[in-house]
Length: 279
Image 1 (spheres, rainbow, N blue to C red):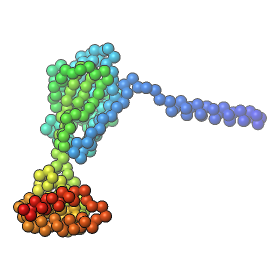
Image 2: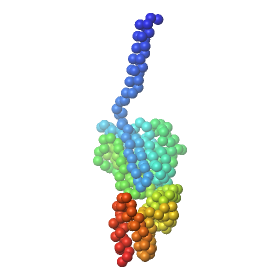
Image 3: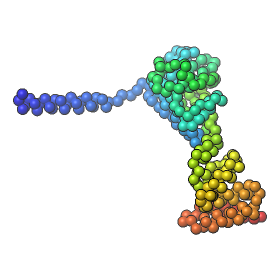
Image 4: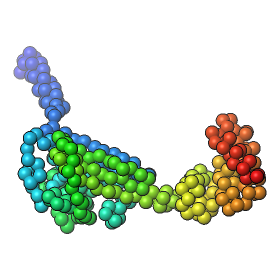
């Protein structure tokens, strides 16, 4: 083989490799583009991943999406929903984890299906014996929505509504979270001065498990006494109408706060509280 031929062959090989590599990286717009929606409820993260089909002048309900048949609730891959903590759907506990979300549309009532297999493609790999939960919801009439969309609405500390809109239909899936229980459960797992103080502060501010909050703040104080857990101790004492000890403890906290490099933002509020207790 001549040197010229070997060099030419090498250039051809490199060209083919570059062409193949370039082709492998090409991306094309999807007919039903992917989408994600995320919402934090209390301390629980909820993530939904799906593909958005368009109406495109077609008959959707009872047409493109048949009634009374399992539907992937989107296009392409099965729609998935993931919870970072335990939640409740229709009054039933759903453990933290990732699931596929299917529905069975009907004219008067939809069935929502939470399935334990999140890795299927569409509804082709769906198995009813892998269902974790099924429950009913009522569809509502709504303004036209060209591209199917999930949103989170009516947010509170302990819940949110997952809303599905497509064509002229709206479906609401209520999700409930016991944020107080999750916070207190987490506090029990890690009780340095700061986590114990934070749990105790949460209890007092939200009027939840107040007696446990007192104990956690005492545990925080046993590790380290500082401005933060002393002011909280004073507030707990005042809650029990022990204003003499509350005033004494608050003064000790304020003395420590005065020595801090950056005076705490709530320092003036704590001073005002102490003056009220003195009365």
